[in-house]
Length: 214
Ligand SMILES: N[C@@H](CCC(=O)N[C@@H](CS)C(=O)NCC(=O)O)C(=O)O
View (spheres, rainbow, N blue to C red):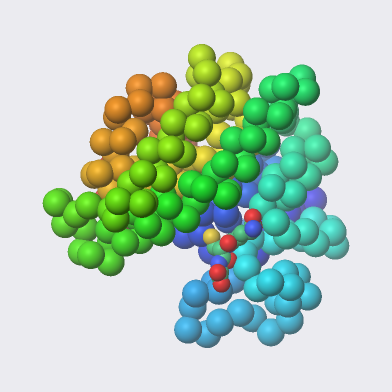
């Protein structure tokens, strides 16, 4: 049964769900909902997502919002590679990485770096405000610490939901030269991104129209 995803492809959180669907091999369709469009949300969308955000899914009448809930549901309800670790400590590390990404990395990497850089015209010498640069370093250090010997973010030999949560945020952040230098300074994170960036669905689903990804 096809999963319907409500959202738009530019959204980091929608991309996380789309990557999860792709890694699991689950058929899906996207129903475009863009909270940032001039037209606003479609009538009735508050019955799908009471906070008016994306993504949400509909799986045979089971409607669900909140990305971390959606990805865990998709992993558990469908066959395909298991994207959650079974061992309690490994699962805790995976959930910890997702928590760090949501609470500290998303706003910094996507809005304070990528969006601010683009709004400033994408100039080569652009620098982020000091608090954002500091937070970017701390989030990258925190993820490197969780990752340990890696190669994936939960410290595992195979990708997990943590990696799929991080990739769309990294895609946006790393387009900014200053952010890219911070990643280059952390070889395990750089090596992780090299692997993720080469995944076909990361290349296609995390592509921004009209923007040359670095
Ligand atoms: N906690 C939500 C966050 C989703 C979220 O913030 N989505 C953004 C797009 S990436 C959105 O819908 N923003 C619309 C708005 O802020 O009005 C989740 O995990 O799904």
